[in-house]
Image: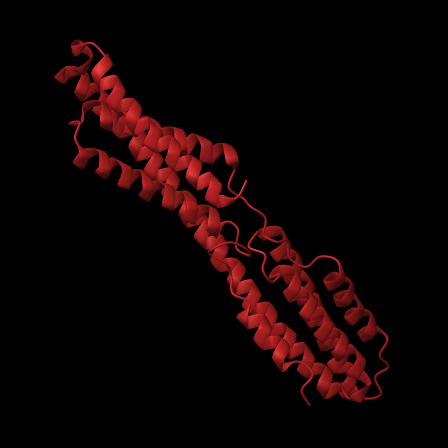
Length: 254
């Protein structure tokens, strides 16, 4: 299920809980709506509201940290790719084919992470992108350095390809959603019962209704942001391909 549909369902549940609270206000016996009952409900719902706010804040913070870490990995991968290309250029004309393979691998990697016209989260570095990256390593192993400088450059290039491979698989692992569905369900349930308690004792007028619906929309939006940050390579909030595109433009230069 897409993030937008999860958000719509969350808003519908929370908004529906508001109307349930208004309905209960008219159907419950008056002793259930006494000041003593009101104070008890406020106390219990205050505890639930604190717990829900804590969990929501932690989830948004965790998703933001994961998003920023992946963005850093993308930038580091772009810089390492350019550095590898420059190292191969210094080695000599023997690396021309390897540099071309590196360029193809980078282009395939960009297409696999940021497919044009696809707004669904994608899994990075699959299929041809991995095969081409491994071909770069194989080409480096096949070089026959003639000087100490070329031996050092070969070793350096192999080290850079290892760094690229490590970053690639870290991105593949981290790009998958990490927020448990059950936790989102429980969070929406907590918010729903909080809004039932709000509407249960609130005056029944348009101002209160609109205020509660706006609050429900705001909380649903925070859940949407959390889910979008948890899918960093697709959706409305995604990591830019600009660093990798810039790196691709620099590959193969003399």
